[in-house]
Structures are given as C-alpha cells and as structure tokens.
Image (cartoon, rainbow, N blue to C red; front, side, top):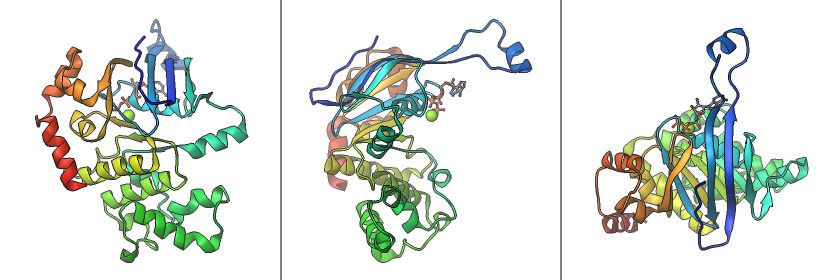
Length: 286
Ligand SMILES: Nc1ncnc2c1ncn2[C@@H]1O[C@H](COP(=O)(O)OP(=O)(O)OP(=O)(O)O)[C@@H](O)[C@H]1O
Ligand SMILES: [Mg+2]
C-alpha cells in the first residue's frame, strides 16, 4: 500500500483503492480471454489531497490515470477501497450525489468533444447555473461575461454568441474550464487538459489553472503523461506505473531525487531546467 499525507486538512482521502475489469463477455471475448485473470487497472492506490492543493498524476498510456480520475468522482465503481470527500464517503443517494457533483468537476483532453457544438458559448458556460437554479434566464449574459472574464476570455471580444467551432483550441479549453468552475467546485480533475494544444499556448492554460486553484481554494488532480507540464504547476506529484502509485512526493523532491526507475526514465525524457528557473518563469508570466 502506498501512503502519503499532506499537512493541510485533506479534501480528498483515497484509501487502498482497487479497480479490476472482468474479462470480456460474449463468445469471441470469452474465447480470447480464456485463462486470463481480471485486469488490475488500479492497485491499492492511497493518497490525500489538501484543500487548494494541485497533485500531478503522471504515467504512461494505460497506467490507469483516467480510471483513477473517474473512480474518484464515482463515475466508475471501485472494486474495493474507499474515497472520502470533505470527510464523507462518496454519496449514493441521488440528492447527495447532486450536491457532490456540484463540488467536483472534470475537464478533458479534447474540449471539442466535451462542448455541445450546437450551443452558443454563453449557454455552455451558464448551463450548470441554470440547472442548479442559481440564475434565471435574464441573467445568462451577465453571468457568462463574468465567468469568461475569469478564464481570460475578455467580454469585449464577443465570445458570447459564438459556437465552439468558431474558437481556437486554447479558447475552447478556456470555455470548458469556465463551465467546470462556474459552480465554484472544491475539486477539479483535469485529465490531460493541454496535451492536444499547441506547445505555445500550454503555459497560459496551466497558469490559468494554477491561479484559479489559488483564488478559489480549489484542489486539482492534474493528470498527464508528461512531467514537463506537471512540474510547471503541481505542488506534489504521484507517479503511476501499471496501476500503482510507485512514487509520490513534493514536485521539487520527485524532480531532484527520483527514486523509482520508472520516474528516472520519465525525467530523462524531459528537457532540464532548474526548479528556481521554473519558479522565476512562472512568476514572470503571472
Ligand atoms: N471499460 C474497460 N474495460 C476493460 N478495461 C479497461 C476499461 N477501461 C480502461 N481499461 C483498461 O484499464 C487500463 C488503464 O486505462 P486508463 O484509460 O485509465 O489509462 P490512462 O493512464 O488514462 O491512459 P492514457 O494516457 O492513454 O489516457 C488500460 O489497460 C485500459 O485498457
Ligand atoms: Mg487517460
């Protein structure tokens, strides 16, 4: 079992979480799977996440990062183990689940797939407020302007009436972030949010996530296969390998003193800049 603790009161407590998928059903699936064991996609995952903390989850494709994200949000049922959010087990009752969904949001790699192409931007970003009855139809424009401003899409640029296909990839990801944070969640799971974006605009999106996390005291699980972006924004990093957390610690510690051979391999693929230099770069751009 991998154990790690944070100094602040945890928002999220993940304890001994496991997820196995049963072998495939159906005639062909069962023939192909004959003799095989259920896959262990998540193995004994344990960690805490502090309030306002950003935890990077890094690992190669298929290591279980997205499964972990979905399981934390209760969108995939764990085989065993537990997830506690703000001191309570994940709710099962519909009313409590609705409250939990409001506090925990997710954004994805491809904002184009997660935004409804037939909705205007102002409707996309304010839909959660309408669904929860927090604004009326007459307040949509003002609320949309406010949240778009928050994510760096200035109101003067008339984003409100546009459709997703009329925006660039970076602008679309800002819209999906706006939609995710409009209800002021306590937790954001960001699953590879910059991997489909041009390298030149990745830093801007990462700075936005960092500043939203700080100003809203929002905890973030930042999933990536790439340590070069993880070290840009994360307070701590968990390294996943074949369904396990093989190493977890502060970003500085993992980068300066990696212990697991897989972490060392990941680091050797990243162009090296010193940590002080990194902090300086972030400060310059803030
Ligand atoms: N519904 C499912 N049924 C069976 N196996 C699954 C299912 N979903 C995921 N898996 C398996 O679980 C493993 C982890 O998948 P997951 O998508 O969590 O990896 P990942 O680290 O997010 O990968 P990537 O970086 O490519 O997104 C993979 O081997 C995948 O094939
Ligand atoms: Mg994934």
